[in-house]
Length: 243
Ligand SMILES: [Ca+2]
Image 1 (cartoon, rainbow, N blue to C red):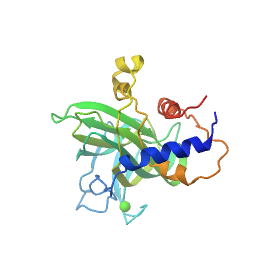
Image 2 (tube, rainbow, N blue to C red; image 1 turned 90 degrees about the vertical axis):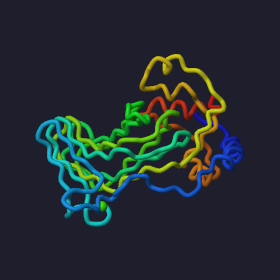
Image 3 (cartoon, rainbow, N blue to C red; image 1 turned 120 degrees about the vertical axis):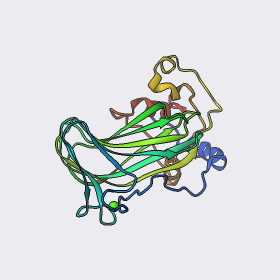
Image 4 (cartoon, rainbow, N blue to C red; image 1 turned 180 degrees about the horizontal axis):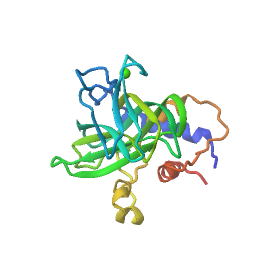
């Protein structure tokens, strides 16, 4: 897949001004897990069996502390609830992860949007890498349903042994979602988990535009389709006139 880079630059300059988000702020409380008395403030550990949630004071990505999980091969997670949000924005989630012996897959993060009554509306899963690794960022983007007012974040080890540390959790609005050019997707229409994809937009600006703008004279632009976000990448590609 390739096309004229000049066409892309023109398109970006037309969209940029009306969709810029001002100064962002991190909506996660106690994001670096530094605050708390006996346990990290605003974070709750839960295990289905005998996993261990440790407020580690020897390993950290920043500061002195992090949220550690010693896995139990079932479901172990640190969570933060009641994070107030506003629909109409593109949100970026990011967490730094360090891990040991995570096989056959990596730790993951599940974000669940809720309405005012606390009912779950939709969830997004972001999967980390597998194996043993030093600190790396796990990042993902999502758009909220129109009636979402709050979020829950779960930092998980699901069906995994091993050990993982989470630190520097952030959730920020980074763009404005404008679904002014809508199309109807019959498959997404009946898949509850994909309902947000019913309204596809050709006017969404993500932070990627900023670095894309700085790349000059690129002869070829391509999209790499991974195993997790195939649908999203295809839809991003469809917003450009790729033959
Ligand atoms: Ca920290």
